[in-house]
Each structure stands twice: as structure tokens, then as C-alpha cells.
Image (tube, rainbow, N blue to C red):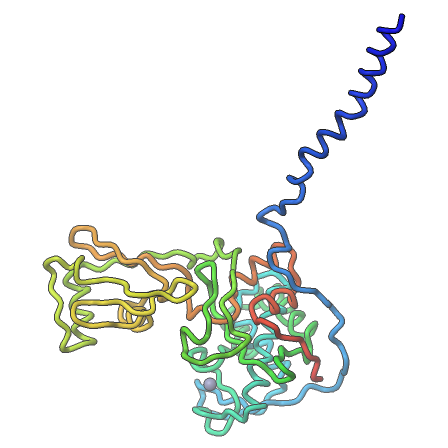
Length: 339
Ligand SMILES: [Zn+2]
């Protein structure tokens, strides 16, 4: 009689212990965050906690690069025209808000530092290669049409209005909020690209870029075109089509992978100059030689410093808020409400 009881108790103990044993064995696996985890980019979000003052926005003197005239425009109204031209209205609301804060910060940075170079005394211009792109409401209506004004303009306006007066600061001062289209998966240190050290423009990961149409591009030249373009820019360069492969060598790259210097023939050329000579989207490239063809395989679009716009859109689609996006790309910055 004793044996079945012992057996029964044994089975009961086993049944109780088995789930405990399993949970202990597999405990560690639950601790590994998924690669998609939000914790990879850790920044606190204080959405809507930035509003401290609410006064009428100031005006800024704008040098209109098209008309060559200086106009005084209300900053927030001016920003509608900047955000509308610097970022696609198809982008998510939080990406547009991040863009609005960056664009506003750029204007305040110029004002705070009394920077009027190239503007005939105005703080900002409408040339996208110098400051930021801009189009007035009437110009947008003319270029994009009534439907865009009806469907998309309110989205741009909302992104600006929702962040009214918010700028990015570092140690209490407006930052230089550089931004660009698409990164290679990592942004650049300002020091490595512009030789200027800004503590908030540091290389960071930018993982959600793949949907950018300019994430990866290829540019092809035939050997003789490739050599001609180099000779046009460097009259005393010594390079020949024979054994071209052995005369071109990437010497070093930045932290984010852009070409720093490259040996071409007897010359050492910077990656940035190569980008400009061959019209590449960025200086993050590889070169391949296929018979008579030279192929540039290029990652990203733009200088790579600061906020990636497509990266910001990628983050917005992963439910990051505009402040989280900004704090990710601009290291150790804060949002300050100035009006
Ligand atoms: Zn300018």
C-alpha cells in the first residue's frame, strides 16, 4: 500500500516543480530586449511640458535670395514656409514638429549670435544652400496648387503652431541645429566633417533610414570620364586608365563611415571634394571597377551632421515623439520655450 502513495506524492512534486524549473531555465531569454526595442534610443519625453510663456512671436529680418529684398516677417509665419519646403508634408506629424523646432532654433541661433553674413544685414536668407529653403504662402499656392494648400498646408501649420516658441538649447543657448536628408545609418561628428567641434553634434546611430529613396545610390562613370573629371579639378594630377584600380585607394574614413581621404593617382583628395567632383549624394561611398566602368556605391544624402530628416521620419513611425527625436540627434540638448 505504501508504494503507490509514495509514487503519487512523487508525481505531485514533479508536477509542481516542472513549471518552476522551466521558468528558471528560460528566465534569461525574456531579459534580452528585441532589436526593435525603444530602449535602444533612450531619451525622456516631456511632451507638452515645455510651455512656459505665451507671448506674441517676434519678427525676423529675412533676406529674400530670389527678390534680393529684405523683409521683416513674423518668425512663426516664416516657419510655415520653411518647414513646407525643407520637409515633405507626407512626413509624420512628430517628424514635422522636430523639423519645426530645428528650423526655429536655426533662426534664433543666427539672431542670438548676430550672424548676418551674406544677408545684407538680415539674419536669415531663403537660399537652401546658405540658410534654409523658404516659400511664402502665395508661392506655395502657386507651386503646389489649391489641393495641397487645402490638404497639406494645415499639417505643416499645425507642426509649427504646436511647438510655438520652442527651441533647442545647450547650456542655455540656442544650438546650431544642422540637419540633412538621409544618413548612412549613423550621423557624423561635426568635427570630422566641418573641423568645428559642437558638443551637441556628435555621431549617433540612425537606424530607421531604409525607406528614404536616397538611402543607397549608384553613380557610374566610364574610366575616361572619371579621369577627365579629376584632371579638370586637379591640373597636375598624375593618373592613367591603365591599372586604374591600383591608383585609387580609400585611406581613411570618419566614425560614421564617410571617406575622409582617398588616394587618386599622386593626389590625396578629401571625400567631400570627391563628392562634389562626381556629384555624389554623400561622401560615404565605396568605389568599384568593372571593366571600363567606375562605380560609386553611395550611402545617405547630405553632409551627415545633426538630424537626419528621413531618420526622424523613421523614428516618428516607430512612435517616438518630436522631443525624443530631437534629443536623439542633438546630444545633451534641452527644449526651451522662448515665446
Ligand atoms: Zn543665408
